[in-house]
Amino acid sequence: MSDASAAPAAKRTRPLSPHLQVYRWQLTMVMSILHRATGIALSVGTLLLVGWLVAAAMGPETYAKFSECISSPLGIFMLMGWSWSLMYHLCSGVRHLMWDTGKGLSLPGAYASGYAALLVSTTLTAVIWFVAWSKLT
Image (cartoon, rainbow, N blue to C red; front, side):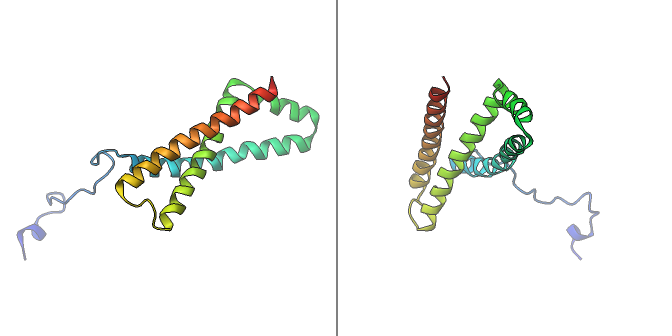
């Protein structure tokens, strides 16, 4: 029997599994984490949509209260975040579809498509809110 296996479990030195603190953050890593996070945000944000539909079904008073909440600064911030999450998740999904065809798999291609996804999603969100805001005022 070797010395390592005979040693008590507390004294054995085992390799630690690498974690986020070990790796240097890279765009591809951040994009992957963001894709998952925006998927979660979309799921949670969809509850706002369901709340809006339920409030509309319950009558004008309930709908007015819901509209008042959602048009507050916090509500607008949440809606902006939800719309950016939707646009980012869409752009990131298109990026993954491109990868499925074998395009953009090189490191420069992955970085270019990552920056493009961030830029396009932010631009689309800004356009959506500009159009929505101009219709409201």
